[in-house]
Image (cartoon, rainbow, N blue to C red; front, side, top):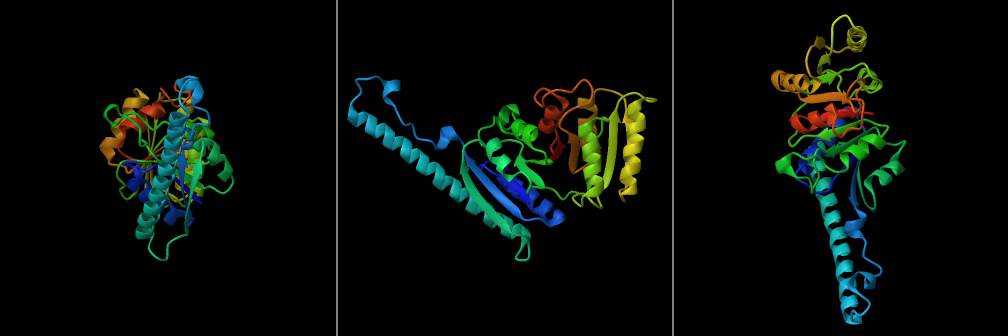
Length: 284
């Protein structure tokens, strides 16, 4: 199943296109999930403490009714988002396409994702959600939490979808990037696409040998692979290579193996997801 997360943001149309592409490659059904966060959809149960003990009963009733109305609006908006998602996906996939289901839930996206564990092959979501600051390039607040909690790969959709026929795999020899190599070699998602495999480091190192082994494995799986070990800063080198070579997808581990071995925030991963104008396939 392709689990597709949407909040009705500007990325929604692209999210649906990426999900449709993945569903076609994996021959998998799509489930579209819309989550109403607790602060958005839960009415307050006791307002007296926040506005004082002497507030009139009439005022308290009006505030309670307002919260209930806001929660109802959130539910109706979510239903409209899901209906739009279904229509967009049906247009993308056609009548003979895979099954499309939808659901609306209340609570934390990460907690709800845990309920789908075991049935999901891929999670698709946008780089930025409805409340992200586009002018500052901020990423969606759920992105790091989803990647940290998911055992499955996460496809982070770019603003626009473009057919994916060439991808770049940023390799550092760590467990996340080794998982990415294995997944690509054994799954049909990227079969037939040209692969640029790059690592940033020093020649005559363990990384160089690991890079050669990864390239050999991908070629053995039928991929057309070019592999290079490049000097410099990973942030700059990988971002420049994505732009120069016209790749349609960046594949990388969510956690680095060397100096970038940290949480996603502040790492090479966050930088590349933010600055690269292509979708990013992440492996934890």
